[in-house]
Amino acid sequence: MKKRTVLRAGAALILILLCAFYGFSSWRQTEARNLEETISREIFVTDLGPVSGFSIEKDGRRLTFSLEGGTWYCSQDHEASLNQETVRTLANLLSRLPALEMIENPDSLETYGLADPALSFEITTADSTAALLIGNALSDENQYYACISGGTLVYTIGPQLLEMASMDLSDYLTE
Image 1 (spheres, rainbow, N blue to C red):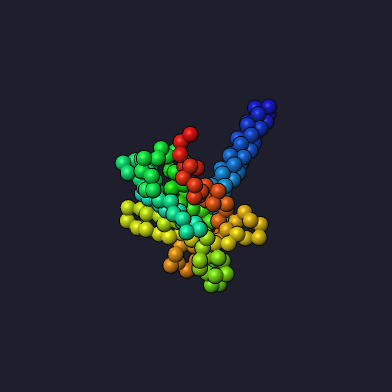
Image 2: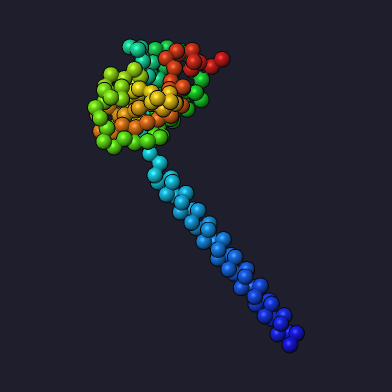
């Protein structure tokens, strides 16, 4: 009788452990699925691949950077000693610029300050060139309207790109 009780207790323990394992396994699969869905819903204004050059245009002034042999140069001053990490980070951001929101049926570009933008980027890759336009700030000043020239969608973006994109060459130089 005692032996039977021990066997039943052991079987019950194994059953409890199997149920716990199944529950944990199901929870992990659900979490993995949720993460996949979140990643697949991520929106990008640009998704261009490796950038080989870009220009920043603001207030009629233009700064142009090009990648030659793995090194970034400024076209306006080819001898300038650029902080490669700063320029590379900006190029990577331009290559795959995340959007906070996509406006699928936008009003006219004038509504968003994109018809005559104060800031624009011309981004060059091995097989294409795209013009990224940055428009008005939203009311909270931490988001901006953006679009690809010739595109039909308008996006909102965070402030990171505008904070990095200086028109002063000295901001890109090594110290």
